[in-house]
Amino acid sequence: MATGLGWIDFSREHRDRVFSVIDMLGEPGTVDELGIGVIRDALADCLFPGVSTIQTRPKYFIIISNIILAYVREHQKGSVVSTLAKWLNEKENDVMHSLAKHYNYKENNGVIGINVAKNNGELARKASSVYWNGLRTHGIIETNYSLAEYLNRNDLSEISKTLYREHQSDDKDTGSEYDLFNLKIPSFSLLEQGDLTMDLSIEEASFLKDQLKTDLREKKQIDNLLKYILSFDELADLTIATTSFKDLGEILLNREELPLKTKSFLNLALNFDFIIHGAHIRYNIMLHQRAGETDFTTIWDEWLAELSIRKAKIATFDIDFLFNEIATRTKISTRRFIYNWYNEIMQTSISEERLDKLVYNQELTNKGSKSKLNSKSEEFSGWIGIQELSYRFVQAKRLVEDITNGLKNA
Image 1: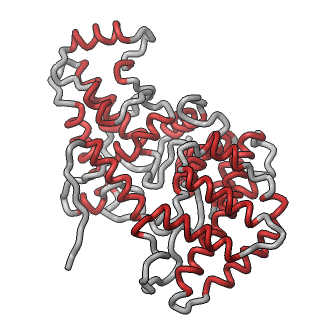
Image 2: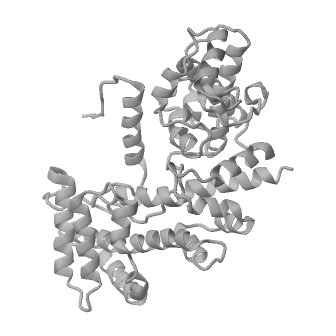
Image 3: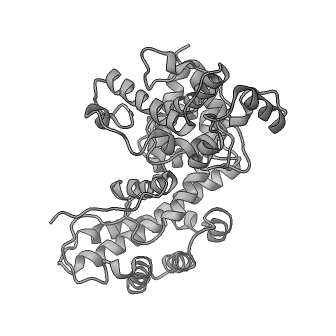
């Protein structure tokens, strides 16, 4: 019997929240059995702010902001405009079909909704919702509003041209003709282009590079890793050439270009990845041993061997800083689990029995009645749960690559 997931769609904002959960569950290796996802995401925000796992290409930062900019310009010309929400929806559909056609409906080019366009359908989760947090984080659109709130607040469908200008004059005194919309982007005339692509022009790449490097105290860590990767061509090239976050991180820790604070974030992330990987190995050992599988014991032995080598580095792992300054929203039970797990693996003699008890109790606390370790099922195969923490490296790498390539178009 077929099963499905449904919900009552009260608003666009509620729908986007549901889609965010679905997107996360749809990624391979992201089932968070031990409840450490909030820590991973907080560290990712420090390293690569404004980047999410469902972003594809940075061109969408330009596309979305220019669609909104075109709405303002259309109104200023004296045209009667629809609601901003309707305008954005229609223009995003147009862009989807234009990009899909340009790439002959082939995947792997970063076009959002390419299969929907092929079937002439309507895309439910559009690029605007995917990139909204990034647009705000990097100050391309300076607002604290959700996308739904922003669209409602800046609707010009019932505001005359004269009243709009008067409202701008009263609202801000910065001299910018688009301050009502908080747009901080030049017009790239995207909607007038006959052949829109996902590649960045030199002007677009230069603008994005500047915005991503800019420090916004309320929105991102001043010394985030992305800023410095984009600040030095050699670091950008290293990022593009590296295949994993771990490899890149180990290289960058020895680079003089990175300030100490950036290295501390990077070191914290690398250490946490290694430390929690051991817990996920024990989780898989316990999960599969009921079926008589012993495939993961070799992986555990390898992890222990690496632990003995890395113990001096792991000793600098600052849990208090992690929870008090970075992952402040971590549940008390998960904090306690990380503290106890870390203390156990730092002992001279490691007790696998105590480690397994910690993992068992943490999964039970985190998953409740859906706990796999507490079930009687033996129908598990392969690795279960998070395997490696990449901290959105894949998406950040593509962002850096597109900007680097765009700057070479001069």
